[in-house]
Length: 266
Image (cartoon, rainbow, N blue to C red; front, top):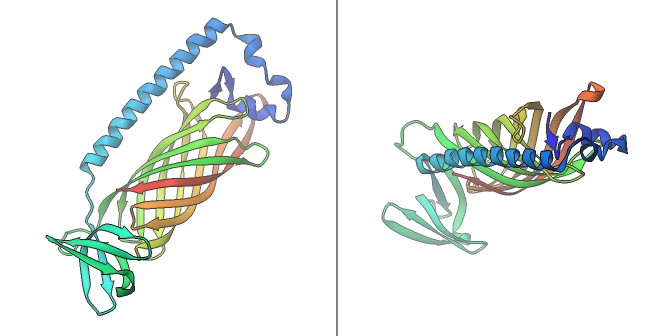
């Protein structure tokens, strides 16, 4: 069960139907016991974040990509390389080998992300980091902050599949808890253009970070948005977390509308 100041999230959700349980932790626990429990929880969270940061840094160091920027000009020319500067609605600079080319947007037909020619397999590593916030909806919704870290494979410019984890911090309505989801992530870029709409679907299971990683329940996350050059994305979506209310032997869905205000692919 997820704990919050010695209350469970399950109890907090139940409190939305029965407010008699709001002060349970004050009646059943001494200040000293609560302090010791809080310190243990903080140490567990710190250990988890340290391990998670190590994985993140290692992935960033070893991440490689076999995709390149491709600029199609209106005069029929095609320039392949890496876009090193882009002035919105005005111009871009692209580095191709040792040369740097400057083009005005009115000279460009389109910009895409494509596999490097002669680069071997089109299967490439894709890492994704997402930060966002989530607002509760429905009778059992709870507000939380969102952090995702996904390790995946880019099959082609359109499709990617990966394994993700992250953190959900529940911070309102008598709740102070950390959840760790483990999930599979499937993403689709609608077009091959530099700026493209995308759709993402994640499904898995969540665990409680601050109380021995006890299992919580089924996890579902959907998201739609805009991807800029396959490196930055913003979006909006819906997230569902299944939570079991033990005292009522009842499972409920805690739902939220989520906003990804910063997503980075590497």
